[in-house]
Structures are given as C-alpha cells and as structure tokens.
Image (cartoon, rainbow, N blue to C red; front, side, top):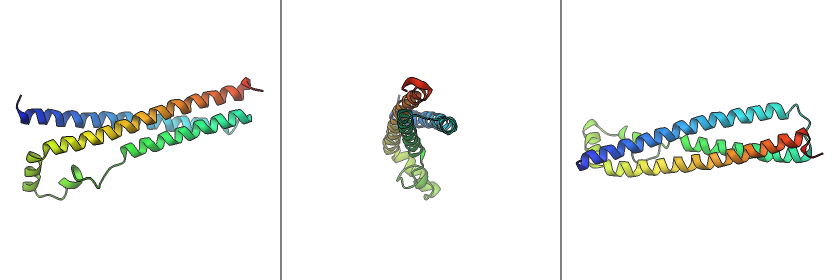
Length: 147
C-alpha cells in the first residue's frame, strides 16, 4: 500500500470515528433529556423525604452536567485552522494544493478532535450512570426505603 493510500485510509478512518462518536453523543443526549424530563415530571407530583430530595437533586445535577459535556462535544469549532473553515476561504487551486500537501496534518488534527469528542462522551456516560444511580436511590427513598 502506498503512502498516499495509507494516508487516505487513515483520513477516512478518523472521519468515520468522529461520525460514530457524534452519533453516540446524539443518542445519549436524547436519553439524558428524556430522563431529565421524566424525572422532573414524576418528582413534582411526589412528596419527597429530605434524603430522597438530596439524592434526586444530585442525580439531576449530574445529568445536567452530562448534557453540558455532550453539547460541548458536538459544538462546531469554527475557529479551527483545518477543515471546513479553512477550506471555505481558499480558491480551487489553493484547496487542491492544501489537500495534497497537508493531508497528514489534517489527519493529526482530526485525530485530536476525535479524541476530545471521545473523552467528553466517556465522561458524560460516567456522569449519566452516576446520576441515574442517584435517581434510582432517590426513588427508593421516596417509596419508603428510609422513613
């Protein structure tokens, strides 16, 4: 496999990883939103004990933090030096020259973007799991686990 083919394969792989991460992020964001809405709907109609209120509040706070991480992960970076913002400022000739000579740098930059997105997604999953556990604890406490 030639260097050009190897670079093209690496470029496609990094772009595919970014797309997969964005898809997972979108799904998790929808799930977190649904859990937040459902929790609020249930909690406003149920009398809560102080321990249930504290656990539920912490759980909701963690879910809100997870939603913030997810939104930050999919936020477009228009200040970037590579990719769409740069390409939009170039002529056809400049674009061709940049893509031919700068593909390795583009792969490196896309890899950093993918890693940042993946790290944000991983942290959001951890917060979602912890927040969900606290909401389960709050519901058990509200149902009479602690009188």
